[in-house]
Amino acid sequence: MYGEGIPTRQGQKANTTIQTISPGIQLNLGTHWILDYGASQTFYSSSNFSDSLGHSLELIGGSSYENWLLQFSQSYNNSSRTLVQTGRQTSSSSYNTGFTASYRFGTPWSLDSILNQEVMFVENPPRPRVIGL
Image (cartoon, rainbow, N blue to C red; front, side, top):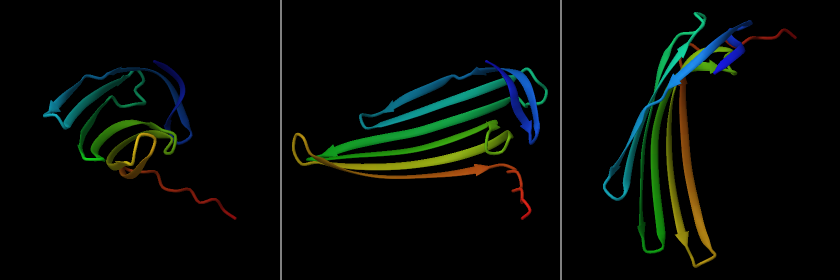
C-alpha cells in the first residue's frame, strides 16, 4: 500500500510504502474452545516511520445447557501504527473481554444479555493542547 500525507509527528506528514506480512494459527481446543494467534510485521519505506511487529491473541469458548447458550471471549492486541487521535505512529495494547448469555423461549423469541469490556494502553500519549480563551 502507498500512502501520501501520513502523519509522522504532530504537524508533519510523509509519503511511504507500507508492506505487511500477517501469518496466523488457529487451534481448536476440544469442542468448546478456540485459540487464535496472529502476528503482523509491517515495513515502511520512509525513515520517518519505524518498522513494527504486532500481535493478536484471542480465546473464544461457548456451551449450551437446556435453553441457555453461553459464550465467552478474551482477546489481546498490540500494534504500532499511525493513529488519527495522536497524529503520529503510536504503540498501543488493548484487552477485550466479552460474555454473552442467551435464553431461547421458543422458535421466534430469545433474550440476549451481552457484557463487554475493553481496556486500552497507549505508550507515550501526546500531551493535551490547551487552547487559550
